[in-house]
Image (tube, rainbow, N blue to C red):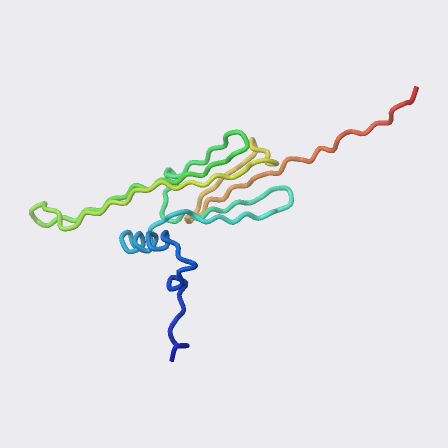
Length: 144
């Protein structure tokens, strides 16, 4: 009968992580739809990389991509509120959701001046052209 009980690492004190309980509390409080971070996929297309960041529910105006030096930061900010009032103007329900999410990426080896971006259907697509590798020039020295 013991085999039918699902095993959970939370029962084993060796693997106890107090942050698991905090994350579970956050999921219960904010719901499963709460965004903690956004996921990215990076593909090598030969001459460039394609970075796709999943940002569902964000408007294009809520997303900022900044490149400073060799670091690119993608930041998305959500500011939503819904209100429901009865016939007298009293609140029956009022909910607000605020959050700012960001990730940074190393841009070493990327031609930052040629980076392009597009946002469609909740996916931010960045084309990151690679820098051309420069080989050191070789020359023959005359021996005197």
